[in-house]
Amino acid sequence: MVEPEEPETIEGKRLRYWSVGFYEFQPDHSHRWDTFLVRVDGKEILVEDLLGGDPMTLKEWRRKEKPMDRAKP
Image 1: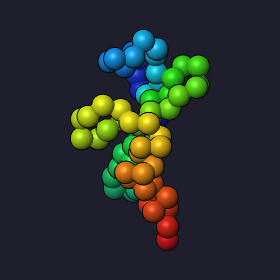
Image 2: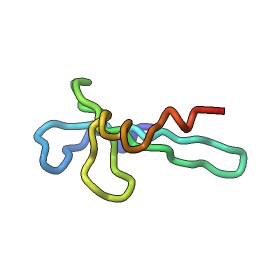
Image 3: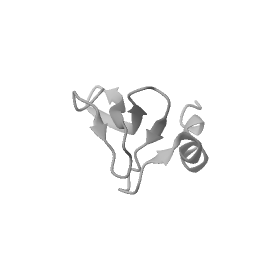
């Protein structure tokens, strides 16, 4: 899901980013997994820090969150 409809400028950066949320939908609820900030030119992807910190790089996010562990059965 892309929100808002227009790209935003992230504090401390001059370039604009699309905010792309990834959700898991269940019959009785939905759960946001993560929000990715994709630079308009596609050359950078950041991940929003869910605890309110600065966005982190994909490398930092992968090391910290270990997203592939979520996909294991």
